[in-house]
Length: 226
Image 1 (cartoon, helix red, strand yellow):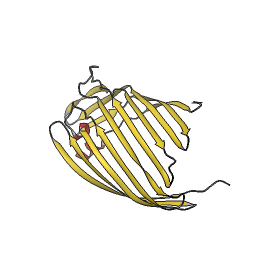
Image 2 (cartoon, one colour):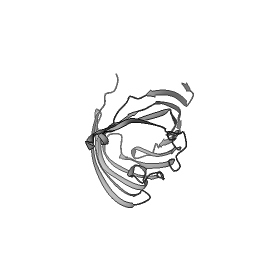
Image 3 (cartoon, helix red, strand yellow):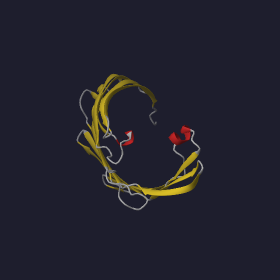
Image 4 (spheres, one colour):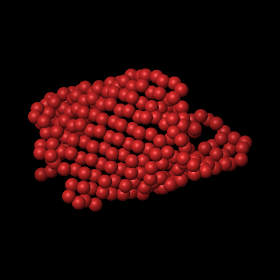
C-alpha cells in the first residue's frame, strides 16, 4: 500500500522441514530435523526527495510461531523439543546525497533488536536477546560516465547473546574500508574493489581479533528504454 511518501506491506512465510548442513556433514548416526513454524513479516517504508538528496527508511517486524526440533536414530528413542524465536525489529535508513563531483554518495545506518526466545516450556531464555548496529558512508568520486574512484567506510557492533559461548552468539565490534575503481559507460559499468575489515569477537569465555580482506569484481549492463 502506498500513501504519499509512505509504503507498507506484509508477508507470511511457511518453511519446510530440514536438517542443518553442519549436522549432516558430521556423519553421525543420529538425525536431527527442524520443522520451522510460520513467520509473519510487516514492513513500513518512507521515501522522499530532500532537495538534491533523497532519504529512505524501512521498518521491518518479524514475528515467529513455534519451531520443532526432532531427534531420532543413534540407538535412542525419538524425542521432540519446541522453541519459539522472539520478535525481531529492524530499522534501516539511507540518505543519498546529490554532491557535486560525485557519481554517487550515501550514508546508511541500521539497527536491529532481537527479543529473547522461548524454550519448550514456554519460558524466556535469559541472555538470548541482542542488539545490532551497523553504519556505512561512501560513494564514487567522478562524473556521470568514465572513470570513478570508490571510497567507503563501515562499522558494526553486535551486543552478543549471553546464553551461549558459541561463536554464533559472540559480541562483535568491527570496522572496514573499501577502495576501488569504476568505469561507467552508456551501456555498462565495471567495478573492482578491495574491502579490508578488522574486528574483535568475544564469546564471553574467549576473545579474539581478526583481519579479513575481500576482492570484488562486478560488471553490469544497462539499456535505456526508447
